[in-house]
Length: 300
Ligand code: 15L
Image 1: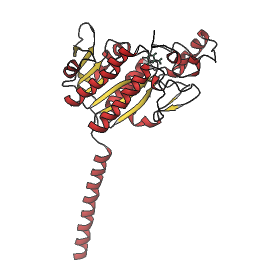
Image 2 (image 1 turned 135 degrees about the vertical axis):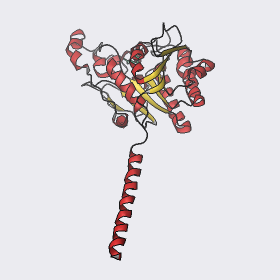
Image 3 (image 1 turned 90 degrees about the vertical axis):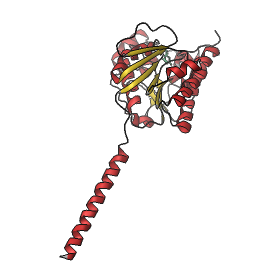
């Protein structure tokens, strides 16, 4: 009788322990996820090509969408607040980042240009953005980096996100700086970033290169939303491409972002190949992944 009671007690105790162990395991395995709907999201560069695409789409993921650009953005849509700001203006950036839960940073120079505008927006502007994030307590930034960080890899190579950068110009170099800055702010101050090395995000692929680099607008939205809502990201780099048959980029190290592209450039392949039947194999733009960017002179 005594033994039976003790055995029962031990059994109950081990059940309770197992329960608490399982609970702990569940808590450890399921850390609190980022919200699927944010109180206030900031979209910078809202007047740029991709900013214009994302502006109406991001509204569903937040109560208030703060949209920003250096110049006029027109009238605000319901649930939007417009704040004009220049990346290189520290004070404006501090105000812009106040009460913001997460940022989709599409602002800055997005093509090869002389050094000065790149320095102002993509170097000084990035430091201003991250300093403001640190001081205002912003938790996560989704940064529009670019495939031009690795534009000098060849088109017969497959690049993953742990391989060293090979920028193809001042623009690509500035995006490599942005990624390193994001890494620093994660390591030192715990601000999370997903750096999106965006390929060619247009309505459809325009040429043979874009059969590999194309990112549809719907997949861009899927990518940005995955980057905003993945539970833990630290600083993660991910290539922004659709599910194209030909690819130069490997996102193995970014599986935890949970990005699943649903579009593919393949439906445009025959039209693109008919438009561009031959490729000059000696042309640097056809040899390197950066395409025409590897030849674009920043010196005018
Ligand atoms: C980029 O980074 C540019 O912002 C965009 O205009 C495209 O040209 C794209 O890369 C590309 O590589 O096609």
